[in-house]
Amino acid sequence: MKFTEKLIAPCGINCGVCFVYLREKNNCCSCLSTGTNKPAHCSKCRIKFCDEHDKSEFRYCYECHKFPCTRLKGFDKRYIKKYHLSLIQNLKYINKYGVLQFINIENEKWKCNNCGEVLSVHKDSCLKCGSEYRKSPTEQNL
Image 1: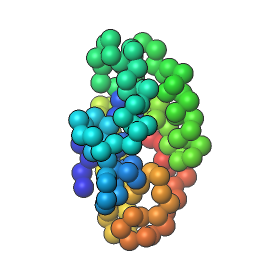
Image 2: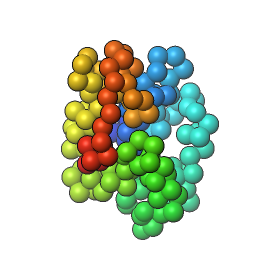
Image 3: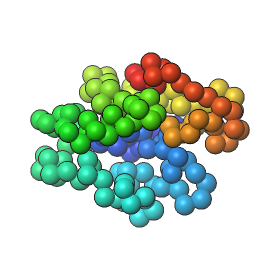
Image 4: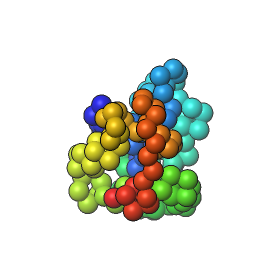
């Protein structure tokens, strides 16, 4: 699987590595899609549907004059603690190098070394082959 721009959410999450997107049954259609099969927290995302985003119609949160806002900082803090991944760092990378370069890195970063399938940020083992993996906080962040 190759990630696309449609899988990169405004907050810097790569929906392509989300467990709900990757699971076989009732999988999510991604943050930016118009499909209805999304978890409630994604359908009502306070970051994606914030007032600033609606007013300015920007694509990524780094384009906002409030970047990083309080909501994004809180979300980032949870992702760093639980998954060793900084969404703010993702957004800074996208801002500096572009989304296509970010996607190139994500394609390699989230590939299982054992079977080549996509790994989930939310799991400690490959969903396809069960191979365990753990990345250090340094390896997870760009």
